Image (cartoon, rainbow, N blue to C red; front, side, top):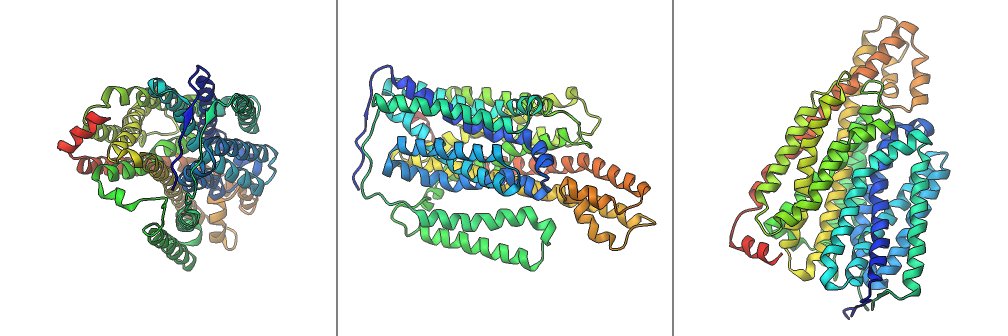
Length: 525
């Protein structure tokens, strides 16, 4: 395999490359969290069921999770700038499809395109900064890139709320297109002035089959976790999904152990600190995006805080702002020290925050909530950047790129699994409450039990049509139950996240063990 020899442009024009790469990564991360704020209006406008609603997020995350490792290989084979442009085009095409969407099929197609584009942009943008920036300024440039990446995650809920309330949810994706067009114009200038010069690798193997097998293994698992309340946790279809998932993941593991250039080097996991980084980020995934997802749904629901989209996004600032500031500062402050205790304390801070949030009710005020979200933000700010630093320390330099990609993949998969499990918990609690009320009715319609699922999980139009089959007095009781279950269901999800954070604290305490090799790694970082 011929290794690329890369030359870089040494003038101040490398800042143009940095601006372009940072803008693209900002669009990806801002969109990821802005969509969560807009989701209740998307659900109402396109009449989505609860199951479909969560797949607006999950289909995007799953595609990005699998392809983030593949895109790293493609950027070596075909060039970082070419993969970057591919990301701009596919993410932009997905945004346009969603803007025009009048049904769930078009919406999901757009989200798949955005997932492909996100994987390409996140992978290629960091690589472009690395090859175009002179070494003396590289650390500063990567700091700016990662800072804007984190800033997009933090500002996304607020931007999504403002755009949704001021215009409508489609405006979120219009802004994506505008920013991507600016990035594309900057790309033309970069290409015209040859600011990025690279020699692509020859005879490089790309493990396409591994990527396909990973999708085959993960998709049935996440769908089963999402739809278990609908198809039955012990039913035949659930068994088929479980067998398909286990078969796909087992085949993926078998393939990766024999692939010339695998997506995942399994021997990395023999290193305790790398295992801590991957498992910790797998737990951070549902915590980071899950708290945004579920808090947003509760804060905008009729049985919750009944906030507008803007206020729901603004309410998350204590979480997003704290995690953003700490994720920028802590790697510099703690980069040469042992990271065991900061990470463990971060997990415990998140657990405390979720425990406090589990006492939230529909009568809670912002004064009751903001300081609880700060605990979660502190935990995320401590764990996510420091876990990635632990993972990079644990591997030799020649494997850091791929190792980082695998950590990112675990983070994305954790997001999908966490949202699926949390949403299933919400669905089960909601169905049980509605079922209890329907069974207690004196004048319930025939086959009322078959209507429970539609009431608990159906799209708004389905719920409205189903309620029409009950007596007016009974409709009031059912609607009241649908509203009041939101607070208890939200509390249960917060307890679930608290347990996950405690598990993460225990794993990191056990795996990030102090020793002479840690001191050597810290000194070399």
